[in-house]
Image (cartoon, rainbow over all chains, first blue to last red; front, side, top):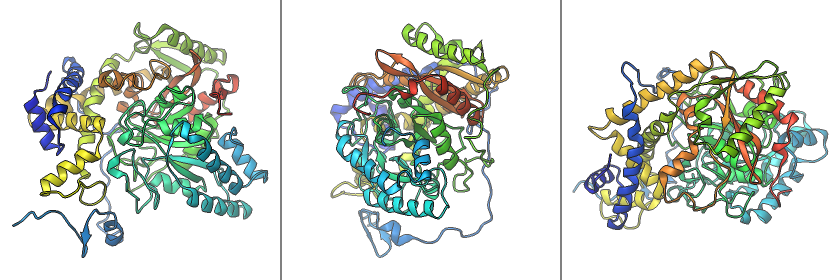
Length: 95
Length: 484
C-alpha cells in the first residue's frame, strides 16, 4: 500500500512533525516500502482471535486512593525551557 | 584487571585483592584513553562513580556487601539516573538531567554496583546498528568500519572492548541480543514484566524490557539478581518471586529438550551461518540434550506485526516531547503550534520521525482496525505458536541475527532491509518470552550469536543452558584485537 504526499502531510501535522518539501519525496518511497512490508499482515487469518495487549494478559492493578508522591514542582520546573512563578511558559494561546 | 568478568572482580573485591576505588579509577582512565575509538559512552560519571566506589569499599569493610558491591558497570543511556544526564541518544534530551532514578538504576545502586557512565545507543532505541544516535555511530571493537548492532550498541561495544565487564541494556525487538551476537557477548532479555520499566524511557511499552550485556552467563545471572523484581510503579511489572539465578547455573543439562524451528533455518539463511549455529547445537547434544524439529508457522508475520505495534506505541509515547516541560525547545516560537512543530522536528532524528509517522498513520481514523488491531491479533497467533512448541521442548534455539557484524552505512538507506536484522529476535518480544544470545562461533573472523528462547519466567533454565555451554566452549572468551 502506498502513501501519498497529501497523506504524509496530514499524518505529519497530526504528529506535529515538520517535513520540508525536499524530505517529502524520499519519505514517500520509504514509508510506502514500510507499509508494503506490513501489509503482509492482511493475508493472515485472524477470525475469532482476541487482540493481545499484554503478553501475560495482566490487568491494571488498583491501589488505595492515597497521596503517595511528594510535590516536587520546583525540581521539575528547573528542567523546563521556560517557567515562571510555578507556571510553564508558552507563546500566548488566548488573546 | 580489565579482562576480568564481573564475577571475578566480585571475588577480588571480596578477598581484598583490590578495592573499588582502585578498580573504578582504572576503569574510568581506560575509558578516557580508549573510547575515542569506539564512541561507546555519551556521558562519564567520574565524580559520582568515585564517590560510590568509596562508599562501596566502606560497605565491603563493614561486611554488608552484595556480590556487585564496588563492581564498575555502565548504564545504557535510556535509564534515568538522578543528577546524571540521560539523553536516550537524542538531541531532544541533550540537556536532560533526571530528577529521579529509574527502578533499575535504584536497584543497582542498592546492590552497591558503581555506575561509571551512560552508553551510546540508537536514538530512542530505534535502530539495529547504532547509527541513528545524535552522538554519532558506535564502532564495533571487532572491526574499524563495522556496526556493533543496536539499539544497545554502546553497551555492547563497551563490554566487548573490555572497558566495563557488564552493562544494562534494553530489548524491544532484539536490541540486547543482536548487539550481543555482533560483538561476541552474552545478552539476556528477560520475560516481559520481570524487570520494572519505571524510569526507562519508553519506546514501545508493550514490548520494552530491560536486560543485561556481559561476557558470561554467570555475570548475567548476577546482574539479573539485582535488577529483577516487582515494582508497583510499573503497572505492567509482574508480581512474582525472584529466585537466585546463580543457583541453577551448574545443573546438569542432560535430557534438555531443544527445539529447532524450521522457519529459523530456511533457505534464506546464509549456509555458513546455519552451519555454525548447528555446530553449536551439536555441542549441546554432546552434553546430553536432545534436539527436535519444531514449527513456528506464523514467524514470517513477526516483522510486519512489530512494525505496526512498535511505531504505533512509539508515536503515542513520544508525544510527551512537546518543548514545554523539558527537553529541546526551538528558538523564538511564533505560536504554540510552531513551538510544537519546530521543537519536535529539530529534536528528533530521521528514523525516529519516520516511526512516529508510520505509527500515527496506523493509529489514525480509518486505519486502526486494519493495522494496530490486526497486528495485535497476529501477535497472539505468534504467541500461540510458542505455547504449543513449549509443550514439547524446554528451550528453542537458532541464530540471533542473519549475519555477523556488517559495515557502517550498509543498510542506512533501506529501512526495511535494516528491520530484517531483527527477523529472528522480534517474535519473542511479541510473545513476551525471555531469550538470550550467547557467542556460538565465528564467521569470517567475526562472532556470531546462538539464540536460546525460553518459556515464561524460565530465565534460570536459559542461564543454566548458557553457562553449561560456556564451560565446554571458549567462544565467549574470544576478544577483539586491542581489547586485551
